[in-house]
Length: 555
Image (cartoon, rainbow, N blue to C red; front, top):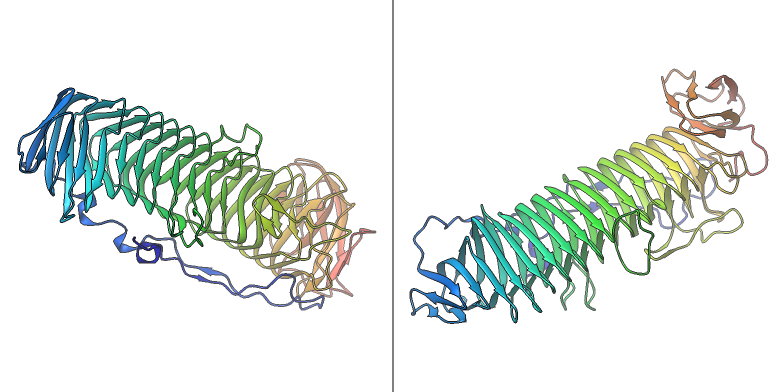
């Protein structure tokens, strides 16, 4: 068994975080250490030379010719002929012709080297068994030449008990009413145009699925790609190539069959497009229909990622987004992490979600992020991906931390804009929130525990919303104002603090929170919204409010 730490990902999380609600209610607002996440890359030994080797123009050790219900191998010292063609030793085998109910079986008990099956314009159908079965081998490489098709009924079209690689310059269509390709160990795709039509799982593997080139298109009645083993170290990684999945259940599902999980789901390069459960046009059901789902960490690097899911678009124990262009649409969470969500770079757009970004700890340290959600835009709350503990004005679990230290974050929320069941810390970056129209939610919301903090020590924040639950920052070292000011879609908000900041609203609002490093205690400023102008008065305090009730400095 190949352990994940021997191959997987150079991701080092050097994270020092606040636990739960930290910092107390003092004006210094506590301290938040910098979040550093190394770039998402694949280990050097993720692929071996044989995975990319082209043997299609070399002289084969034996020829296998398929015709009707039988196949013939040219060198009987290397195998046997008949309705089952058996290969018993390493080497290169060129397969040609068309066969019905013919099976190719690789049974090299010595496992002394790679077996190359060059499928040269091959068509195989089998009503009773897989077209190709790997019983014993060091590794089998299917090299695809021309147009090839493998179709099985009642079984996977390809069933490999050992490592399997698909490469080449041709196209291979795999069709089955069961799983498309099954592999007990490591399944790699480094070339070819692979199309999988499966009634159940498209690609199923025990140890890993690794995509390093070519194009893979999967239509599956169940999961597009599923990984499970008894040791809990299965993983998925893509470094190059194109992956398109249309799955009835989860797009990519990496999990454990019972052991403690140490695997991961990593997108280090290439292009990935996933539709799960019919997409976000469908309502969430009791069936898991997530785009990316992992019992361990989900790591998103320099990849083009698009997910349209009836359930969470991205879900993992922890989620790290460091680069790339990511577009998500979901009927539930855009991104969900049971533990920590780190965003340090890249371009992330959540165009539709119930909750946009959700984790117990959310760290935004970089990148360009846009979130549109019917409920909370960003929710730092404890809980699994099937349940979370919502904070409220009359009581809270007081767990969860939201840290914004860099990047650009825009939130358009029907519920709370930035919602932490515990504390909210802003130390840098630019945050714009267009919050709720109703008075039951706020553009900013934090927990009610004695140690919960709403702190600003850097960065620029404009949070627009309603008045009923409006909250101002109440700790930190930077002036912040919460003012009553009415505005409509199309109104531009500016402040004469010399920063040049401006924003044009896309919906109506009745309050505004504004803070920036350009504000100074002891001075007054004017916030203008459309035709309205209000004063921000910091002559006597860092925190200024003209909103009564729940507004003003709350902590």
